[in-house]
Each structure stands twice: as structure tokens, then as C-alpha cells.
Length: 553
Image 1: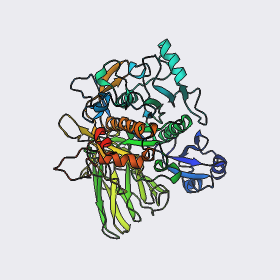
Image 2: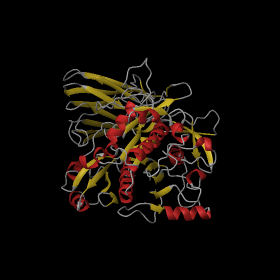
Image 3: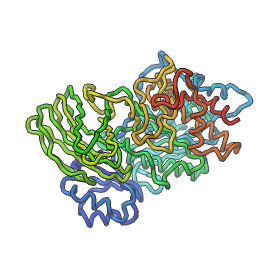
Image 4: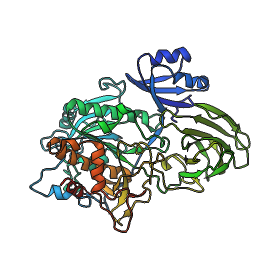
């Protein structure tokens, strides 16, 4: 879980009126960061931890889940040598070069949520000098938040156009480049170099630069961003593709939203999400406990000290498993019964390592046992997680280290499992989940996360090009990006073309629901005759927009 300075855990809370007053009655002085009228982050510390169950059970608490850090799912390389634009590979150029078709994403919004955008890059400026960006919400810059929100500054197209005319780059800055690159793959104009144009050149953009907590992107700000871009699409009466370029190992048990949040029931809203970059990173392991009292030990290795290490243990419902930590020198953590938000903490004296074990059972977000292990100043060596069956039906467990980018290269499970490495939020059932394919050697990118989701959902749905993809980079340049984030961007651009055809042009408006779009994307995927589909690596095959349209006949 994410922690504010001085707190031990943080929880995202969707709430009704009077939430803060109800919390203060139970635990006066509890820190609550209100982000909009019905959502915020509750920070838990040692003084109020024993009251956390009461706080989350107040009448106005609608839904809650742990606050977790997110990784942007791409690796950026400067330059364009040996780079790829995959529009030809996925069938986009058939539409770009066909004078009888006008499929460009016109009338469809694409939302890109990440590190922001270089709005002065020529690839996001139309010939008349106006911006492709309809709205830009910089959550990091205080000033003028969107209506109903309490953080950041919102810029309209008119304000961005004025900045373009003045060559004013100070409204918002994409320091990392991810948002600029993903926006360019989705909808860049190729003004600097026409060979690097994006998929849906006439789609307009809504861009959110997410705020961070303690230097990390997080699911609280992502929740707000998704809520915001959906509202903007509805206000403007335009269909929208929401591209998700981030993921985390921390919340992989989540697979189903409440009905009010399900994209399944909203025509013209299509969610496309990167599958994750954890396929070969040794950050996941799994196994089976056979009966009550059966003991399994999961070994993980640290070749260097880890200052803060958080490990997630998910037990298939309705099973209950007691969790203990065994140090390299054989010290064993204390025990506590499994219940909802029960916690044991202590210190391993020989290692000088602090530890905590937090049980959440049953979770409100998945109904299963979720256990969070925290280690502070963990010393190098081979550690063990001891799992003891308490109530067992199927006994399946999955254990996750943090995303590879958050931990030392030598921190790994000794018996890793590359399957079930789909990261949250790609685990949800109402989205199109996209893995990464290497067009250079016609194979799966090795780090592309594999399915299924631990809920049993078939994931990924498809794979798309994701290796050495050339895209706009801040400063009017191009660079390359590798990962499932660029793969999802290609799929998002294709979804915009599809929505233009079926909804904007009113040819098949009944097909403009995400579950139907996903079906066409699966059916139109390119498949190798030597491989059985669907599978955990490729899903239903490789993205091809021309084949998708062939399915409409």
C-alpha cells in the first residue's frame, strides 16, 4: 500500500456525505486527503490502526481499496535507429492509403493518462495552428482544478491554442516523455516526420498528467483521471477510448467493478489497458496448499538490501491461510489470526529488519484473502514466506513482489511463475487487455505479462507491436519506447477507428460497447496455425485492424 509520511497504510475511499465527520468521531485527527466531492485517501497510522475496520464501516463509506503505486509500462530509448512504426504491420496503412475510405478517428476522443504531454510538439498541432488536445488536466499544478475536483489545473483547448501561438511551454510539462509518446502512437500527426504518424490522426486528445505520492504514480490519481475523462466525453457527447499505460502487481485480485462503474453498460466508452511488463521478471510465484495444516514455503532472494519491500499474497476464495516470514538466519515472525484488517508487526533482531503482516479477509474488492507483507531494511539473503492452511478448498495461492522497476535487480523469487502476471488494472473484466509483440523477430516480447488473471479471466485479449516503437518525444523530437504501453496505444488508436465507423458514422451503433469491440478485436487478430488460441501469452492473436473490419461483413 502507499504510505504518506508518518502513516503505515493508505486506503482509497469512495464515499457519501458526512464521511469526514464520521471518521473524526471514531478517530479524531485522522488524516484524510479529499480529492473530489466523493473520493479521497485515508491515511492510517499506528495510533488509529486498531480502528481501521470501524472507520471503513461507517455508513457513508461506499467502496474502498488499498492505495497502491503504479508503474508506467514502457522503457524509453533516445534516437530512432532500428526503430519501428507498426502502422503497416497492424493494417492501419490500408485505411490511410485508401482514397475511398476516410477512417482517421474523426469524432472520437482518446484519453491518455500518465506523465502529461508536450503540447508544443508539432505532431499535436493541426495545420490551422490549433491543438489536438481538447482538455489537459495537470494534477500536479495547483491553480484551477476541474469543476468538482480539488487538485491540479485544467486547461481548455482555447488556453492551449493561446500558448501555442505564443510558444509558451509553461502551462504543463511532460518531464518523463511517456504521455507524449503514447499520445503520438494513438493520434500523432507526423508533422515532423510523416513516417511516424499515429494511428488515428483526426482523433482529439484528453490528457491527464497524474500527481504522485512520495514520488510514485498511484491508483488514487488514476481513479480520478478515469472519472474526469469519462465525464468530459459525456459532456461533449463524444465517444472515447481510454488508454491505460500503467500497472501494478499490488492489486491483481481486482477483476470486477461495481455495476455503476462498469464500462460494459456505456455505449461509446472503450477501455484499453496494457497487460504489464512482468512476464519474465521473476516477481510472481504460485502454488497449492493441499489441506488444513499443510505448510508451503515460498523462497525469495535478496542480493542487496531492500529499504522497503512489500509483498502481496492472494489466496483463492474462500480459503484461509496463515502467513509467516522466516529470515535468512531462521527467525520467525509472530502469529495472528486471519481477519479483516488485522495486523502484526515486529522486528527481527538478528537482521535488524522491521516487519508487518496485514490480513484483509474477506476483501470488499474481490472476496478473497489478501495479505500484505512489509519489510523495512531487509537484509540480503534467502527469505521465506511460510503459508499454513487454515481452511482449504482449492488451496491455490499467488505471491507477488513489487513491479520489477521498483526493486533491486537481484530481488526475485527462487521458483518464479511467468503466468498470472497480468498487472492491475488490466485484470478488470470490462476492458481490452493488450500484451506486447516484437515485430523485429515476429515473437512475443519476453517481458509481456502472461495470463490468465488470478480471477481466472482470459488475459491478454490480444498482443500488439511494442518493441522499439518510434513516437513523438518532448522537444519536437522522436524517440523509441518498448513495453506493453505502446502496444496498448496501437490498440487504442484502432479502437478509435472502429468507434468512428460504427458510432460516429452510425453504421452499427449497437456495436459500440466495449464487450462487442473486444469480440471483434479478438476475432480479427492474426493467428499462427502452429499455435493454439486463446493462450496465456498471445491471447487471441496479434492486432490487425483490417481483419477487424472484415469481421463486420
